[in-house]
Length: 89
Picture 1 (cartoon, helix red, strand yellow):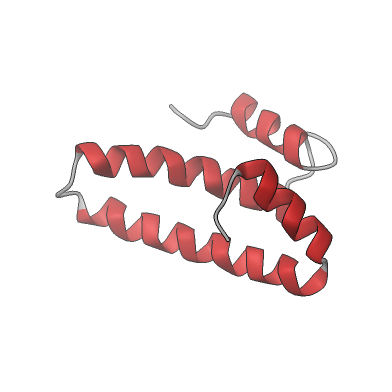
Picture 2: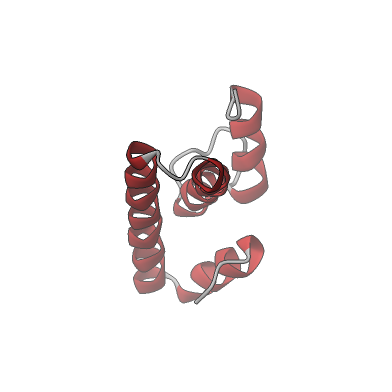
């Protein structure tokens, strides 16, 4: 399994306040980014998997919504997470 409990805790620890900080926008964006990267590789190998393609599109939309929220609330936190994760925009 590509996303087990230990991997989630690692992502939350690196991007949130602690490894149990699952609700902050930064930790959610980081988790979505990790899942998007994994699904992108899957879709590249299995180009006819339309269900996964749809869920990938939904994840990108959720991440975009969180990034827009963070942009509106605190521009410095937005810039920091975009730079840390290497996202465009």
